[in-house]
Length: 220
Image 1: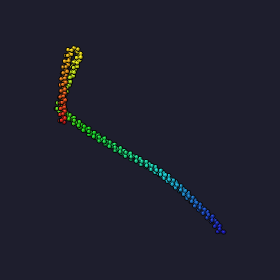
Image 2: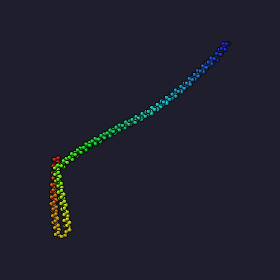
Image 3: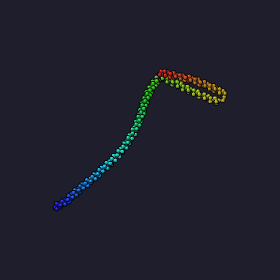
Image 4: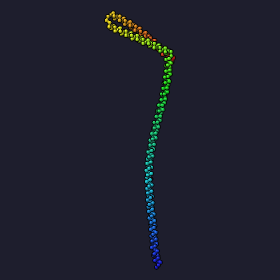
């Protein structure tokens, strides 16, 4: 009887122990579950962050590719422009070189002109100072003065002739007209003589000048 009481008394104690143990296991399990949920939440957050980061990387990569493509296109355009610019610079360089060559050639021509001008001036100075040229100049001046004098005499004769013609138109007497005609004839004859003399002298001057030119050409 006492054994049965003892066994009955032990059974509630065993159940209580088992219940307490079950509660503890439940609490541990619940704790583990909560921790697992927290861990899962953290993992989900990490995965979301990774997804966001991946999307950001994809977006940046796409943007970088577009930017790279744009840069490549700009580089191609600049390369074409650079080639055109190089061609333009080459043409400009050739033009500048041609201009410089032309300037040098022009400078040489100017130097030659200056040289020949100095030589010509020297020849002229020597020629003008030579005795033959001085003599020819003196003779030419003398002949020119004589020609001027003859021209004055001819002009004087023309004035006399005009005066006689005026007198003839005014005169009404035949005797006076005859005298005027005789005087006019004399004046005309004198003028003709002076004119012939002047022509002979002019021809002589011309011939002398031609001979002198021929002599200078042959000596040159």
